[in-house]
Length: 184
Image 1 (tube, rainbow, N blue to C red):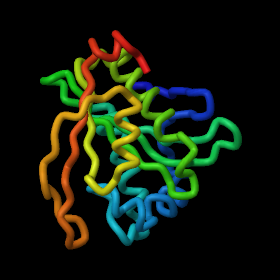
Image 2: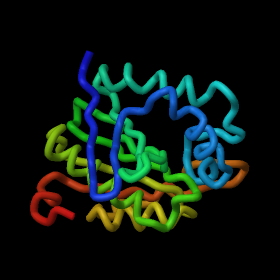
Image 3: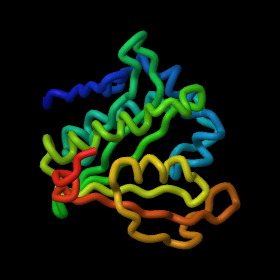
């Protein structure tokens, strides 16, 4: 069994999810504001969904498909969100994804966790490229991507249908060479 990494920043610890996190995952991810701004989080977030999702994380990590972290505060250990990267071994790239619980918005936790995730992707995983996308209506997520030094790569107009409305997919990317030239 592969050892699951733990990463640290000034204010955060990025660690493996545990079953003890189930109630907070259900509470935070279950907020309609989170589901509205993400492609795969359902609403309502029903009993059993968090357990099933957490149980899927280690096998996909061990298979080299993704690495997903609980984002917790260093002081107090409160779970504030999730950050992860889907891995594409063939292209040596990673797709960054994240959510931060509504009570923790506006404190820079997402940018702080994402900076560490990008560092991990390039320095530890040896990725060539990291990319991410957001719904056109989720401008805050786009600002995180810009703060990471990612370049705007395009918009797929009305690419997704979420809750009966069409959403643009706005795409960003960052190459390892760009990150090394100006690490954020």
